[in-house]
Each structure stands twice: as C-alpha cells, then as structure tokens.
Figure (tube, one colour):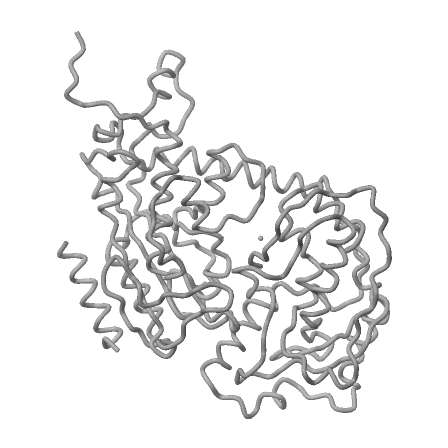
Amino acid sequence: MNNNFDLDMRLAIIGRELGDFGDAEVVAGPLNSSAPTPPMIANLLLDAEIKTISSFVPAHLFAQFPQKYINNTVQENYITDHFFDDIWKQDWDLFYLPLPGRKPHDSLIFVPESQAEHMLSHINKVVSENLTLGGMKQDRLVLCFDGLPIPKPLYLGKSHDEQQKIDLEANIAKMENFESWEDLTKNYKSLIFEAFKHYLQNVMVPTMPPPSPIKKSKPKKNKRLRLRAKMKAQWTSQLNWLPSWLGLRQAFSVPEYEDQQHYLSPVNVLMAPAWNFHDQPIFFSIDCEWIERATWTLTEVGISILDTYDLVNLPPGDYGESWKKTIRSYHLRVSEHESHVNKEFCLGCPDKFEWGQSHMIESDRMGMAIDQCLVSRGEGRNMILVGLSMDHDLQLLRRTGSKYFAESDKDPFHDRLDIANLFRVVRNSDSNENLGLSRLLGELNELHSEWLHNAGNDARYTMHALVRIAMEAVGEKQESPMEVVD
C-alpha cells in the first residue's frame, strides 16, 4: 500500500496535478463464390468537389484491406484474388502529401474515403458481404483533416490503371504547383502538428512500399497460412508458460509419465499456488486512448500491475478474484487534451476512472510518468507486457520518450502477451476475427463496468482477462482446503 501511495505522489509531482494497422469493422456474410465479378462503376470527383474532400485513406493501407480486416481465410483469398489484386486498374482520384526528409516521388498517396467505401459497397453486392470502413477502430484507417492545424493532402490527378498511377507518382515534383514538406508546413507550429509529423515519420512511413514500380505477384495463400501457423505456435508457447509464471503449473516441460496426471490435473483455486512462480515476473497491462480523428494524438494512458510477489501464499479464489484484488492501476491523462472526449466512433469517458485517482500530465512529461509506473515495481525484474491489439498503442508510447518503449535492440520486456491471441489458443479457435475488449470480457464471463474506452479501466480489465485466461488454461476447480477424505 505504501509503494502505491508513493507512486501516486510521484505522479502528482510529475503532473503538477493539473489508443495486424487497426481494425476496420468487418461483419462476415456468406461468400457467393458463384457470383460474377462485374466492373466497378466509376465514382470520380467533379472538379468542384475536389477541394471539399477532407477524409482520406492511405492508398497502400487500403490495398491491404483483405489481409488486415477480413476474418475468414476463404473470404480473404477470394476478395483478394477477384478485387484487390487489380485495385489500381479501377478509376481513382489520387491525392498526395509530401513527407519530411523524403523525395517528392516518395510522397504519401491517398484516395478519398468516399471512393474506398464505394469499392467496398461494390464488393458487398457481388459476394454478399458487409465490408465497411466504419466501426469503433475505423479511425486508424481513415484520416480526417477537417478543422485540424495540419497540412491537407493535395490533388494529384485521376488514375484509370496501374501504370497511370505509377506515372502520376513519379511526376509529383514536376507539377506546376508542387510544394515540398518544408514549404507546405512553414506556418504550422501547434502541438497537434508536431504529433502529426511524428506520426508520418515513425508510424506511416515504415508501412509504405518502395517507390519503385515493382509489379507484385498475387499473394501466395500457402505463405499466409505458414505465417499464421507460426504465429499460433508462438501464442501456444506463451499460453503454456503463463500458468508457470503464475505458479499454477510446474515450469513448462514434458513431465515424466507417472507425473502427467498430477501435472495436468485441474488447479484448486482455493489453495495457494503449489509451484514456484517461474522467473518471478511482474505483469504490466497497458492501454492508450487518442483523438479519434487525429489518431496520432495521445490523450490517455492506462497501466495496471500484477506482481507475483503479491501472490505468494495467496489462493487465486474463484475465477482468480483474490488475485485481481492485488492489481494496482493508474490513469494518466494528457493535460493539453483534458477537455477532449471522443464521441464519433466510440463514447469516450476520460473522467470515469474507477480504480483510483487520474493524473493530469503534460505531454512532454508523459514518458517520465509512464517510466515511474513501471520502475516503481519492475526495476530489475522480469517484466511481461500485456495488452490487446497493442500495435497502435506502442507507436504512441514510443513517442512519449519512455525508455521502456523507445526503439532498442534489446527488448526491456521478458515477453509481450496479447490477450486476444491467448484467448484464441485457450478456446482452440482458428478465427482471426477482431476481438474488442468488451466482447472478449463477455466471452470470459468477466463482469465489467459500462466505462470502457477509459484507458485506465481498459488496462485494468485487460489484466482481469489475463487472469481469467490463466484460470481457464489450467482447468480451475473449487474444492475446500479443509475437506477431509477418509
């Protein structure tokens, strides 16, 4: 308790007490493989409409839509083969944005959100699907520039085939009104602009393909299947280690034959753990929230800590309830965005943290605050990071200046666990369907409040889910420790 109080005090001093590419919503429908594939009717912009467009999709990310957002392998392969392999043979209005420190032909290319939705609607009619850019996590794929102090993509031209798209990109620097990044942004100085610039350089640029006109072959189904099998093997290994880290199983190994029945028997959750906590780890779950129409702008960080030192001689209790009570939780808010509340794609609730006091932290001190949370218990320990679809969270955390999330050749974490992947393994599911926290908690019969999409609460319930998954993995049972058997 004292350690927790001391950390709260340090966070108060730091704060001066003043959020695979994401998941677009894809609802599976029956695949009509016998349907013809008619050409898509063009939906090009009129000249008067060009300047009114404010919502865009990065072209290279939209081209990867089937692999990233379709939950069924058969549907993914069909839609890739019949639509997305020839995506640039369709009619598009192309926009571009020069990038800092890059040549003009390396500009970021966009298509209007309306035209991307138009293509998905066309696919839906052909194959009886319900693909859409909409949904709670749609904001990671669609970028809206309306009303923000950041440069807006510039019109490049109309493209009717792949070679024309390549030619347009190659000739960006020769355009009559071409402006470099430096010229385009010389009057932008806001915090949001700096965050956007960092987002482009460190999040968007690494996802971009080479600028040279390389003709890519069709995706190889066997390669995708091998990659998924490799990933599932990794998740299975993590699930096998999880009970050992929590003292619920002996350190993971192949037991002797005569020990197998005892080794694999259900764990009595009313008894203290029978084994040592392998590696004596400390678990940190983390969650971020961001401005929904400016996804590079961090607004909240939630951190929860489960320390195996606190679990010594403590029975887990039914469904791990006793262990959950030992979790420490923290909620850090970026003070510059204190008044912002998301309401378009999901209902934010930054003022509804249920597990303690929220701390207002200036953006340039957020990394220090995060490090205080981790170092308070984790220094010199085997730290295990826990999250749910963490890619975007990690990108945002990297730019806070936290030493634990900085680019490094040596990972400071002993392992990194995604509870969605562990859940798939423990339920023996081959689906790659995107699982939101609310749904995953429901599947685990884990009670939670209505105040999700608060980073502090989400980090807490993510740790609850990890405990429930561990209990399910070892086949928990309730049996009184005082029971006497004659």
